[in-house]
Image 1: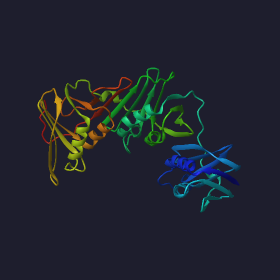
Image 2: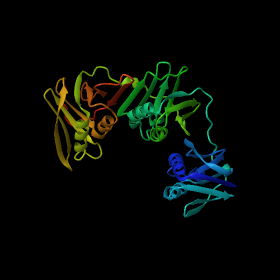
Image 3: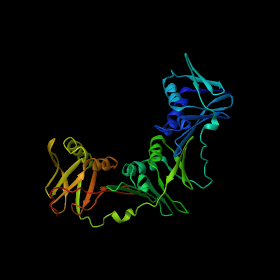
Image 4: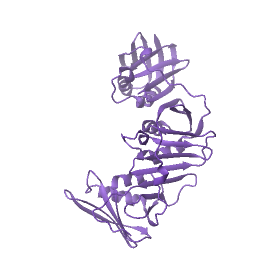
Length: 372
């Protein structure tokens, strides 16, 4: 038996939050459900795919306490289409009725004991930091997380916290992004590889305020407001990424970031759709970007940058470079190069003093390359 009253905006917001954890497909029926549980003057909701769990709470007027697991997708679709106002929910057994103004629905659910056991919160002292700081760090690095790599560790982002600060690194073997925040510390030190789904949900769901991060065994939790994201960490070790960061790149191109992004977008129209290859030609007073694909044609664009090295031609996956630039800030960026086969270091012209940030991109082999 369960009976309660909630406002439609609160119910929709809660479902929008937990539905993000529902798996797109699964062979386990229980994972398609959203768990509803009453607790004093609130309604707790949860969804999970076993690796990632999202819980949240909304205010509610509870007449008869209870719990039930309802089909998540159907429940979410119904609530999105309700007209607004208050939503009355009541039911016995495994059936729950919902009434809102002139609309009424009945859903068949499942006993709560069929729902997976929810993870518990850690007793460890949490690391607390502003949500916007963490979301920015995630956006600047998570694009470089590998997708379905045979090396499991690359399918997540490395987090290292110690007394010196907080480091986040992601790489897929073609590009690398690293950010270091010296103002965030962990006294005992912790290292974990965070799954990309948890990173995406955190950047998407978190608004303003602070987030509390707790590590416990193979689990990490992010607690903000009335919402908590639990995620299993990925087993390591993480590759020794420091070894691929070059230190002798002495050729620099300083260029407007937005203009370069726009030029790359235009080159994409002609570039090979499989490799997205573009060619960057650099001379002191002449820089250009080119794309060529036999089945489509050729594209050429003159760039307006400041280059201080010997003449150089270098090839890139244009989509990879564009994604790196889109996740940076500031008007101009500096591309530091050595030759046509060494990783390029990409930095912002005016870095933020509160963080250290670099991105790396591996070049692609050109049919003929004139190295400086």
